[in-house]
Image 1 (cartoon, rainbow, N blue to C red):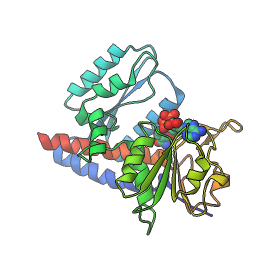
Image 2: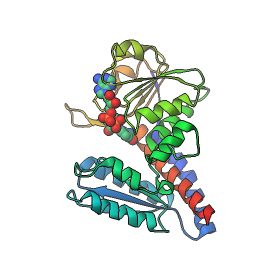
Image 3: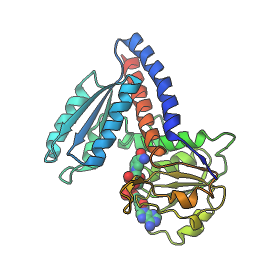
Length: 287
Ligand code: NAD
């Protein structure tokens, strides 16, 4: 039976520490950090993620403004909104909830967010910073995954073999680089990978970010593996939230495993709070 890597608990503890830190910052600088979240459209999943971020801000004491724009918003209108937020000296962090409606090009919007306010860590210069080991903001989900792995007692990442399934810009690729920087030997698998099972069976650590319910099955893992399930899906049978890992099958074989919900999701939000505090401290320190 595996030990659960409880993202909900770990994030709760870290948020309690951040609350103290934010209060100290508020006393020192006269205001708390301020995060602006922009939501375009009414996608229910995006709406629920934004609500989660608002709740976390409230818990930590970070000031939050959510700007809701209609599904029909043009790219130009969204760029204008971002320009205003970039200019506003009282806003420290900007997050545009993805995905965006099809008339808006994501890369244009990501590039438009001021580097110093890019709490998602998606700006090309933050991405370059990650790859070149220069100071940068780490993207929230991979940062949360690393925090979870580092929470395992007496577990060194040095020399471990990891397989990351998924090569997206927001999860798979940055997770690959962040694990590599921890001296992990990392393989990245994707939709065209052949003999995936052979690869996954060799892994000490599996990070699964595929977006397919219960994709990872028992026969794909070796006993003792550490499993991080990034997926957020609806189970087609029950309509309940489920991950990319078939938890019932894999959990008995794993040494540590995350659950969905309650694993990577809360850690992503926790990393966002950390990044917001980090940008605030950099901005106020500049003045
Ligand atoms: P994506 O769709 O951009 O990427 C999916 C990846 O899976 C692709 O790189 C693709 O090559 C790979 N893939 C697809 N089919 C495969 C197969 N049969 N074998 C091997 N690889 C395959 O998705 P994403 O944005 O990286 O998100 C992945 C999942 O993680 C989604 O369920 C998403 O909702 C979730 N997610 C969760 C969080 C969180 O905070 N918990 C954050 C971001 C994304």
